[in-house]
Length: 295
Image (cartoon, rainbow, N blue to C red; front, top):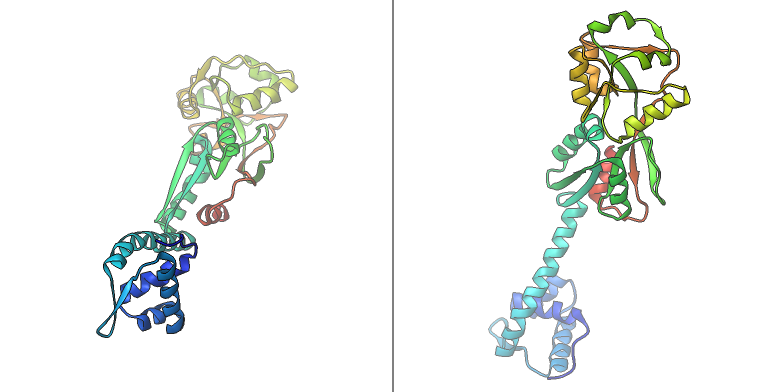
């Protein structure tokens, strides 16, 4: 046996000649001249120190040694062709995977309709959504576990992450018929201290934002109920169990049909944003780029 073959082009030619059973046919498939095909085969045989083809009627056929080599080359070259095909499918958005990080709120009130549109347009692309709080989403983005995140402000920006605002959101206090005396009145924020309030439990971006804003205005909240979800806050408010603090989207249906109303204050609660966060260090696939373009 001779030295190891470093030129994969020889094996490409060998594969096509073996497949076609003809130097001429292989030359046509490879779009090169027949003498070039013949030369490549001879060079491969010289390096390997063995005859790979013998003449046959209207072409060539593999020797026993050629058959053995072809069995391995066909597997490898077949995988290369398959890889090229899969890559082309990925480029054409027929194949691929996107990993997105999103909170319950951003998924429900912003991302979901875009996911539906994207799936209808590119059904071959698998979209994996990691449903997690904003800090975890930002950590996952830094570590390259997701392609991008959709989160709500405010949050502590990490490293080189890039942020794009995509939608405004508002925090509001809502109440039902039992609290009708507050409707259409301009209230002082301080009056919140005398109301039975319903807020989110634990440390949340919404809770932290509201508390921070109210503290600046010398208002300290002492909630009567602390609940796990904003949906539950809305349900408690509808049943007149107190005044709920939520992002307006959660209460929109009830505000529109009159079961709840929004309290008005002499100081406006500054708006927040949904935003898309990307990591410039993470290269994006064609599918992820198209999803971002849709957003």
